[in-house]
Image 1 (cartoon, rainbow, N blue to C red):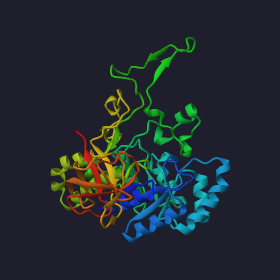
Image 2 (cartoon, rainbow, N blue to C red):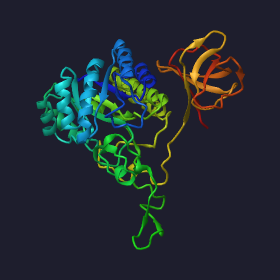
Image 3 (tube, rainbow, N blue to C red):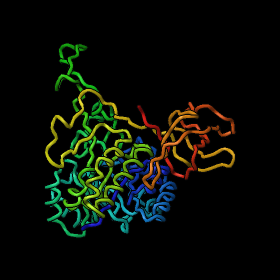
Length: 408
């Protein structure tokens, strides 16, 4: 059996550390340039150095995305960027553009190159093409079935790795190469500035009658005609392994620490349980499904893995998330006399019952005993987002414990 890697996204140094501690084998991140998530906080060069050191100390790899489709005026800046990355020493670069691939081979040849899903990798001939040029891994196109991935595995070298998205948001456009955002807003999705028009509500307007809007009805429920459900393969770990996939990739470089922790920890448990005892894994599927739903998501689908998506893969009546739990904060330290330091993400109050989520897999419901501001003033609640506060529960906490509240 091939070794399975759980690959988790991070958009800042805090979330990278959460990903590492909650079960990732590898983390992928973006720098401040040439990443397809320009709207994320992303990593400075110094952040990358700190994050890579933290991950490597714990046996976890870090990959850096450089997967834009470059224009002429990008290329000189790419050269400068790769010269900086040479000192950072990431474990791999994720690239889709042949010009950027060539520059990476010239400037940072000691670093592995993984070919992004943006390169539309749909057949084993493409995998062998990139292998011949020196790539060590290729990310499959989102549109492939497990049967097609199995055929790719059978027709590429044993030491070539297959990476596949197994969880997260689905893009309406082929392998994420979208023109909608650029056409409608001038912000290019292929250069990291997507405005997500696939989540908007649409109507039709006839050219000769401006202002006269007509709703678009795919059925009686609404008009969100591009709005896909999220991918979730937590029930199908055996099928993913049997297809020959080496790296199970989670989408979400714009997501919170709660999302990353919930998804990473649940897939970590599911993969480990299956490898240890397949029957035990199957018994625990209801538990995994319950845990994976404790973060925001848009209902779930299996995408293209078993068949072409149908009308059941879309959400027609809304573009809102399912939200069963609210993220309250991440424990970042302790101060004698005040308590545990967190940056408050959402309001909660003294006397409230909240849940402590631990990297070990435990979920512990406890009462908030008291809350203090940074000056030591006691507060009944914390109404100001991003305020640094101290909190005490009726139990000791540890750094990187996550506080969350179940919604009714």
